[in-house]
Length: 61
Image (cartoon, rainbow, N blue to C red):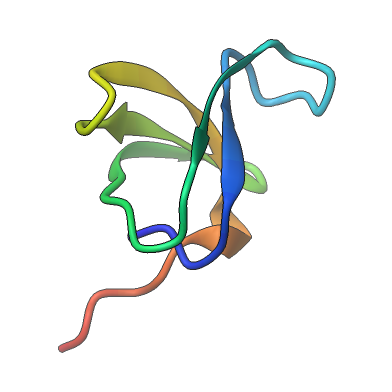
C-alpha cells in the first residue's frame, strides 16, 4: 500500500516521466527493490513503474 500520495514514475530518477499520481491507500505490488526505489505494478491503473520505497506501508504480520 502507498502510505502517502506519490507519483508513479517511468524510471527511478526524480526527473523521470510521471505516469500517474498514486493516492495514499492505493495498492502497489512490488516486483523488485532497486536502491531507494521500488519497481512494481499499480493495479488500479494497469501501469508499471517506480516509487520511492519510503512511501510503502509494510504489511501487518
